[in-house]
Amino acid sequence: MEEQVRPMTSSGIDPLELFASWYSEASMHPEIADASAVNLATATRAGWPSSRMVLLKGYDAQGFAIYTNLGSRKAKDLTGNPRAALCFYWQPLGKQVRVEGLAEPVGDEEADAYFSSRPVTSRIGAWASKQSARLESRAKLLARVTRYTASFAVGEVNRPPFWSGFRIVPDRMEFWTNAEHRLHDRIVFEKADSGDWRRYLLYP
Image 1 (cartoon, helix red, strand yellow):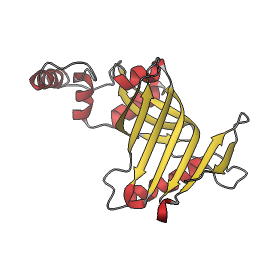
Image 2 (tube, rainbow, N blue to C red; image 1 turned 45 degrees about the horizontal axis):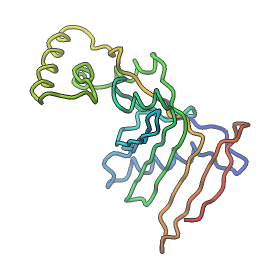
Image 3 (cartoon, one colour; image 1 turned 60 degrees about the horizontal axis):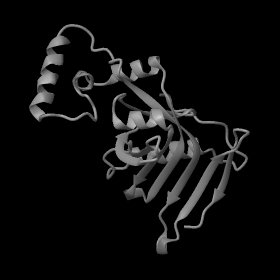
Image 4 (cartoon, rainbow, N blue to C red; image 1 turned 120 degrees about the horizontal axis):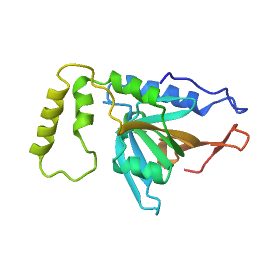
């Protein structure tokens, strides 16, 4: 997704603009292998939580996009209970960003565009994997990869109907900066009913 930002808040800083600045800094840091690595926390409809590391695949003024098999545990969680949270932690920079909001499905056109940008082997892997389902053996998975590789030997590897993405639409973002004596800086942006962002500080 194209990296866009909202108009600035009355405080003079927009959280998406601030995130873009921090993300760019992390992406260029030689000690950070992948700035897009982020912890995604979800919960079932009954409230049972789970979290896992995923890769951010795009962000813009509408939110933060991730992709998955729609049969996966995270997809089922996000469908049944759309409240979700993301946490980026870039230790060499001493910076952390927390994002909370509602998850919504990305559009088919957007999902198709991202899927077509993946390496062919990754696209075949998406067809072969029954993500989060029980696997009898590694050999079973590799056999499925071989079968789908053969079936797509000629022709385009299109997006499976069971694979798509979600966008976390933020209504709260927190920017944390490490400081001496654990007196860390914490800046919170919360979205008001008007749609404007309100900014305040938290004690460390």
